[in-house]
Length: 84
Length: 173
Image (cartoon, rainbow over all chains, first blue to last red; front, side, top):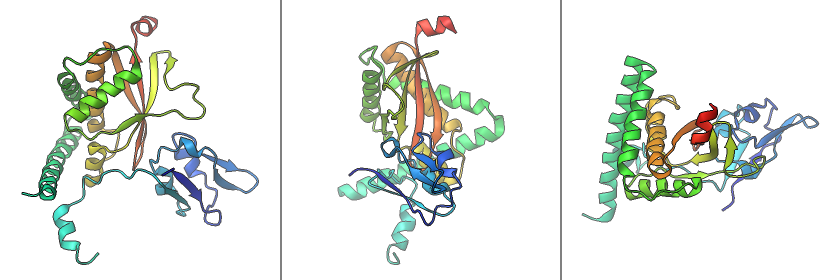
């Protein structure tokens, strides 16, 4: 499955935090629209820093490798299983 | 014991081990400051050297990385990494002032998960252990010193620059 990134145009405030945080320069600021846009999708390493840092939660990723969750508390999960 | 409960048990023990390791690293950083990085680095280097003993030698970086990956797999370490080339980089392996460099993406990482569990910052002494491991293993494979610089520590992946210091680059420096 190919990794895809989308920036919700109505949610993006053009703060450029995603542009700054991305280590592989996936995003660019579109001067006309005053929004951040995905320019080099293939360069995304799926670190998800952009999605975490975006103040309006405008960035979503699909088709990426989710890291193995070693730190999940299994005993706690067992107890919570009936509620979730 | 069925396979699933066996996996759950070994996973739980791995979590406990990492919990202790995280606590030790955090304590070291607080007690001795930046020297904690050197200690972790040396511990990682010793481990990398030991686990890669007798490994086949090569001068090719990509081949050497395959060997390091094999060392990790053979020892049951889930530290998945891959070489990565961005659109503006002409080649995967490039010559730099300090040797040859290649960018790596690290995905599944026990260290990152441990740090997150306790809310510790990334790029600390535990990350230096990984740097040491690579340095030790690559010393055995390629016969050169190396540096693993963290370019970006993310929530789901980290981006690093591996430099293999060649003898010629050392002379220039």
